[in-house]
Amino acid sequence: MSNEWFADNPDVLLNLTEQTQWKTFAKAHRLSFSGRLIGGCIDTLIHFVMTEYCDLTTYAKRYQDDGVILYIENAEMSPTAFCRALLGLKYRGVFELVQGVIIGRHGMLENGGKDIDFEQALAMAFDGVDVPVVYDVDVSHLPPNLTLINGAVAQVEIEAGQASLVQQLV
Image (cartoon, rainbow, N blue to C red; front, side, top):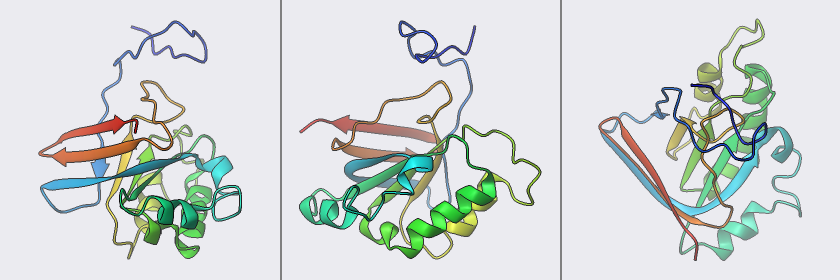
């Protein structure tokens, strides 16, 4: 089977040709969080988050009863650039506003000869952050990929190696 996706062929369906596994830094057997989804490609978002164009503080206040889940994916950043972008979000207080973070698989599969890989970049950036982080999720520039809808209420559950993400439009 090919690893074709909609950018090349708009008629292609989700084709689970690749083995994927969502991962966490949690030591707990079960991980669960919910909230309103907001996010996208960090290559672009990093320039707008916490400005009038992507004001997460106001968004979090508006949906304080639901909570907020930030989802991001990386198209072209190296591990070190990705780490710097995440640290920028951390130091701007973004992770204090959310119930959890979802990170898609990386579009840049090689580390570019840098000293760290993507998992090390995540570990460095989320050190001391007290929110659940799920990474290598099937939301990215790589197939197979799920569609996440900004503003949808999502429930994320991970237990015993099984993961689910359910979205509700409300």
